[in-house]
Image (cartoon, rainbow, N blue to C red; front, top):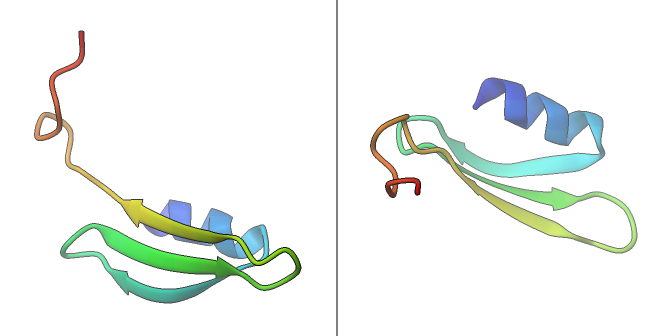
Length: 51
């Protein structure tokens, strides 16, 4: 998660909220157009089964 947040910041996003315990973050692009990203990290093996 830390690596992903670092990458978002390098790309110009402002991290508005991050909770590593929940594996969630909210970021907004600090330039026009104002894109927004919502990130959820799921530990390996706990997500939906892959085909």
